[in-house]
Image (cartoon, rainbow, N blue to C red; front, side, top):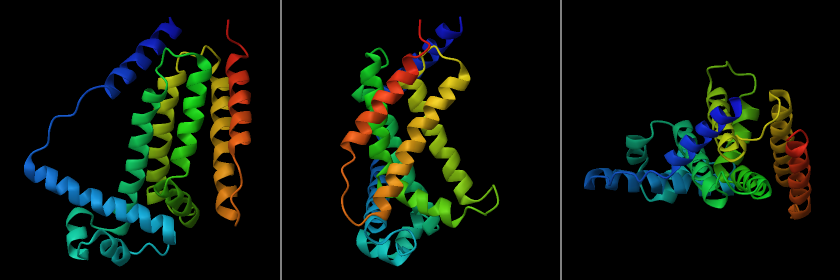
Length: 221
C-alpha cells in the first residue's frame, strides 16, 4: 500500500511538470522580460564578483536599467538574489523529468539526479546561496538564510521523490542516501570554490552515482 501511494504521488509530480503554462499578456510579457534581464545580470555579477561585491548598482548597470527600474521589480538586493536562486531551482525541477522519466531504469534516474544536482550547485545563484548561508549562519531562523535553505530543501525533496520515490527502503536508509548524495556534492562545490586550478570532477561524480546506486539497491526486493 505504501509503495502504491508513493508511486501515485510521484506520478502526480510528473504530470504537474508537463502542464503547459497559459500565455502571458503583452504587459506581463514586458514585465517578465525586464525581470529576466535583471536576474540574468545578477547571475553574471554573482559569478564574476561574488555575493558581497555583486552590488545593486552593478546589477542595474549590467542589466541596462536604472536602479529605480530594478526596484520597481525587486525592492532589495536580497530579493534579486532570491530570484536568481529561484530560477536555478526551477530549472532544476524542470530538467530532472526531461533527463529521466520516473519509469526509467534506476541507473538513469540516479544519474539524472546526481548530474542535475551538480549542475544546480554550480549555478551562480546557488553559489550565492552558499555565501548567504555562511554570512547569515548566526541570523534568526526567520532570516534570508532560513528562507533560502527551506526553498532549496523543498526542491531537492521534490526531485528526489519524482525520480526515486518508488525506491522501497526504510525512511532512515532513504535519509542516509540523500545525505550521502547532497553532502558529497556540496563538499565538491566547496572544493571548486577554494581551489585556484580547475579540478576534474567526472570520476568523483561517477563514483558517487555508483555508491548511491548500491545504497538504493541494498534492500530492494
